[in-house]
Image (cartoon, rainbow, N blue to C red; front, side, top):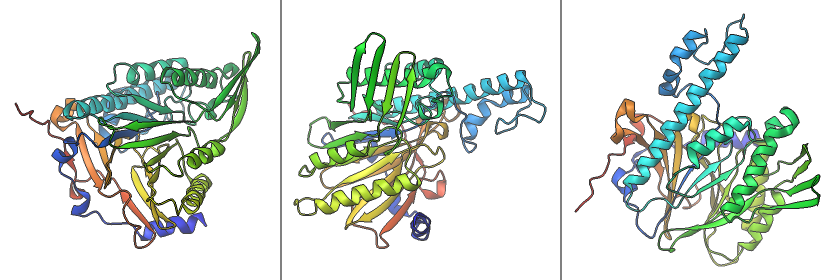
Length: 409
């Protein structure tokens, strides 16, 4: 079933034409009433950059040569502790480079816009393993002095991958403890309960999903943001010191949220970290069921799913579910220096694919590249019921750079 579904995607790939290029000045000149959001994933301190991210790979060239590592940071057959330590150091160089370039590009883009975006959404894998050092670098790199509110989610590298593979499960404990405190500081109503039986017996129980509403400067356009974290169906239990954690599937949370939104005419943006295989199918079925059950409410449904996880992926697939176009979007990942901009207005919404470039190499005015745009994100269903839009870094496909605008007097 899934194989045939993706085969349909492959057959219905849309060739990029002029309709997918964009005026860069139009992107910067966001109307005051329009809601604009930035989306990305995988800050993932410390993980190597994508092989296709050549400037990032160049940053580790000297380190790799010093330890006899190849382009992909692989050691030879006779590696030792020194080489393995060097490998970790080279990975840190690449991770710090990719995050620096991404942060600086976003900072410039925000500064160039007359009306800056309302928020940045980070869809998981804030760290590579939940180590304290990695978490501190994430906080210093992104949660400090950023001009926009950041709505973050956790990914598999933040807790799933390190459970029972980190001393006392302290890595997962670190990330979830920070996450619950982050929710309080952001005044987010996160789905969890804290049970304190005694000072030596504390338990957390919930999906740790949350939702919030984000609006444009004028409040004319809003969207309902749902953050499911790692995956829609992920669940686990673990203990760390005197604290027990029970992470529940976010399916029930999502169903409840959608029921509450039955009669509300605003876009619904479902965020998570990974959405492949059976998880994609589960989400598709849940959304399709909601669309069918609310088919008579009197307004057109606008709902989309956003995720990251696969660093090389930066694309949008649109499925036609009961006559409604539903985008499923890989938002772009930091190791590949990609991100997306979502623009929402009453009559039309668009999705822009963007790439971050190192200003030291290309100049400040060329540090953000537009890779393409989907002009009508929630338009009519595609003729084949499915369509596919890749954001390709190729000058033949409408790649442009953001020229720093001259402010009129």
